[in-house]
Length: 335
Image 1 (cartoon, one colour):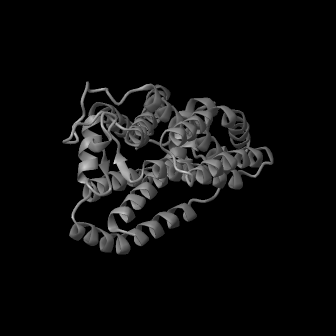
Image 2 (spheres, rainbow, N blue to C red; image 1 turned 60 degrees about the horizontal axis):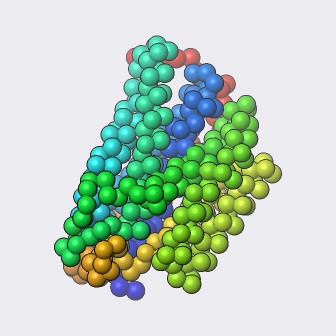
């Protein structure tokens, strides 16, 4: 395997990891006003992701940074072509992070409700933008021979890329409900489980539709295997939720997003950003990559750095692995 192909696979892994980890905490934010019937229950929901949400966002930074370093032309063409949607995503992520930190700073119900709205809005907007970005990379843009986008600023906003955006939102919604069923106790947990059961068959339909469209347009025979695996894992997740096996359902949803990522990016390879104007203008792992020396240095750095990050993040999840209930929420305390 060449270093170019290796780093393409690593970047796919980063994006899948981001969608798996950040997906459920986006979902928690989306469901904040739905499952949190009072302030105490909303604090339960926020506390399930409180120790991990910022660590989950590191995967986005690493995915974008690795793309910039390993495939600078891919990064330049894709991110500049989707500049305005990404700016909106950035504002949503910043607002969401600030809301988590400032929500409890003032002992005021109105203050907390306003920050809850910011959390909810950011949790809906960010996955929409991320889904749009990734689907644009997979389905392509009108690129000229220099890799520049031809057309208006929102050229990336099309019905098929919007389908991808909705697919990420739908997955995050179900993933968040399944995570809350796994991490909470009592009435909150039961409501989350019932909601996940109702949502899953509908919310994951856009993802299945996107997988089928990409397979028909660009797929290879082998990419049909992860596509089928994603569908089977989705069915298993629903069945496990019905059987009251939260952990198994959550794991099955992880298989769903991993298999979907392999199917979508597998259909894209060896392209990294197809040109819808002329296939000769498409960016590939060969013509968009950094030098061999750069990729070699990145490989050595990643070989030593990545295990440390994974161990630390895994340890964090292990420490905060227990369920949370309203009984464990102390009275509101402000500095």
